Image 1 (cartoon, one colour):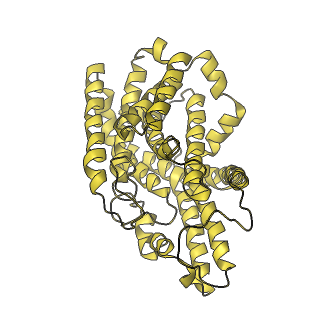
Image 2 (tube, helix red, strand yellow):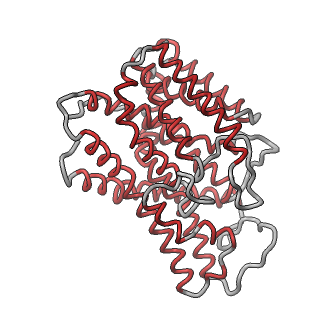
Image 3 (cartoon, rainbow, N blue to C red):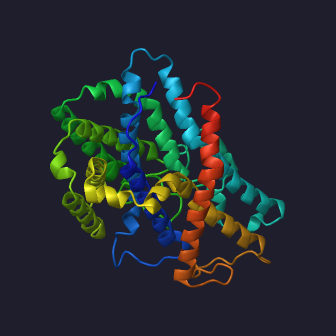
Amino acid sequence: MIQNKTYLNNATALRGIAALLVVVFHGNEIIAPFIGTETTFWFRKLYLMVDLFFILSGFIMCYVYESFFLDSNQANKIGVFLKARFARIYPLHFITLMVCVGCVGITYLIGKGEYLGVVDKAINDFSALPTQLLLLNSAHLDTVFKWNIPSWSISAEWIAYLIFPFLVKPFSKFSLPQTFITIFCITLLYAGLVFWISPHKFILFPFLTAGRDLDLTYDWGFLRGILGFTLGMCVYRLYVANFLKSKVGSDVFLLIIVAMYSIYSHFNFSDVLAPHFFALIVLSTVYGSKSMNRFYMNPILQKLGDWSFSIYMWHIVLFSVVMSIKVWLMNAPPVDGPPEPPNYFGLTSTGGILFIYFVSTISIGALSFRYIEKPCRIWINGLGKKI
């Protein structure tokens, strides 16, 4: 059985902060843009918060499951592990996907399918449902992001789960030099994604660009996820070794790293090193300190951490539902032209739109965690032997 371990409250809060920053990213990108790259790239670079998720996930999986996989007395370990992870991610992925499918289905049923633009039709592609349902939507099988766009990262996470059991034992034997060699190799592979794969990725729409960055999702997102996950496993090795704990686990160190990353992203420096900032943030966070622990133990941050997965999975679905309702209320197809200023049922104030969006997303995330995510996880795990 998995041994009881101290709950990492700091990591929970960090996950909540990262989820909110992803909501801010999409709020600025598609809901009601408020700060452009001519001012700062910090907001544009918030897509990198997904890499923080991957790193944190790799660390947590080692923290929770390493002893489980190293215990020779356990049988059917991989099946038990995958069942628990499936229960964690799939029900909400399936339900949010079905909400998106339902909205588009209603649009066609009421005879307004032609009101959907080229982009909407490409994203809401019924032929892409098999890859969505099989969690293969980050495996370079689609030509553009589909349906609930953030779900690509759930696919990448699942693929990382599939290989994790085979990495546990070799990683558990790493010395510090071997850990740093592995981190160096991961850095080279990140460079390959940024400087080779990303600039040559297939672009379906002319308004998208193939930059030298880590913004790989439906195409090579699974590689991005695996690299982040394995970097998180390396962070766990440093954690077990208490590597520079007194220095890395200090408030000053964490503030310096956060400040350095903020400057780094503000000036749009290469994404290659961004995951390493996150790795240090994760390590500092899980080491903790008295004042750091007090900050992370804030009840609001703890709740946001609990709701983070639901917040992440629903925030674009909420936007999709609103846009579907707008289509249902149209009396004529929209006229092609430049994008119109944000207007949601007469609400045009950027501040007002974003406030309602954030409050609605957090509220739905809280309800989803209580009535969908948690009950489904308990039910699936209860179908057999619990971990």
